[in-house]
Length: 434
Image (cartoon, rainbow, N blue to C red; front, side, top):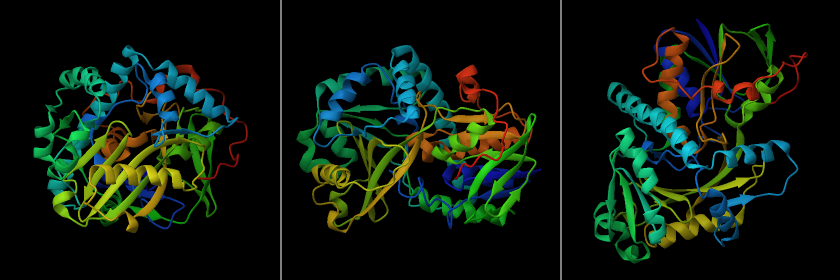
């Protein structure tokens, strides 16, 4: 089958690899000059199934107010009249209850755990290397209230069979010796030993090379304008290089997916949540992180990637703006120097920003649509790297006519019901750049 994948981030490239491995004729289309040059370029580096949880949860509205008032605040909302932003916020608020949180977290953990297993198998089969480490994630708590509040997450982890450890100061310093000098700033930690880390950019670049060896074709520098349709099928992809066609199309354009799907009458509640990172060289390995540390107060992750430290976090709601913010950089620098004051050189840090495609319930949208030859792989939020391999394997199985190895209950666009479907636009060539 001829399959076209729209987008060459970690999600699109993973889909392309598994499709090519299954014997399909694969073409990947992307406006950038190479794979993983947007949201997948410099993310936090976490492969964290155990940390997979929706942002929407009990008590989050009150927490959000506190975050907005912090000096180094993890949440920033730029005033806007954008109806998509306010609709997304209202949908997120509707998920801020215990029942919705438990349902959404189970869905996310299901895909994330499967994806981690797929990644391990891929690594064993191909020998792919990407500065990977398999030493877990450490979630640090500065207050007893934060530590007590992790009880609900632990209940879901237990039900899902995810291993975890609650650690005191001596315990978390044992697994992260670089925290010895700053240990008294924290009351305890939750460790998820099954989590991993790695450079998403390196992984995606290498996986694209392996997909090409299997016959996949990557068309870079091609901007996608619209999707053509007739009845229940897509008939082509309008690009600045002309009309492209395929038997099946996979939408993996992250935050930009909504612009192309809307004219088809598919309204997916995916909003671009802007994140930032800095990448700095390690100056003293003994005082640098061993794996990933999540500072629960600032919602910032500090990750070891070979001889570098990646510091990623903050959430800014400001549409598709890609401008860099000095205030966000200062927050990231504060966290890494507060935890590992002598581990790396912030004066030599590379500053970056990207748009995370977030759904209001936290769960990505993976699977088919009412169009028989259109599948979706979007809405992974901060967990695209964590869920990439599993998403690729699931879609390859679906398109190949095989039953996926995990249930897709609650993962497809159908969970939004009629709200996600309306009559398609009569003009199928409505401009929608991606």
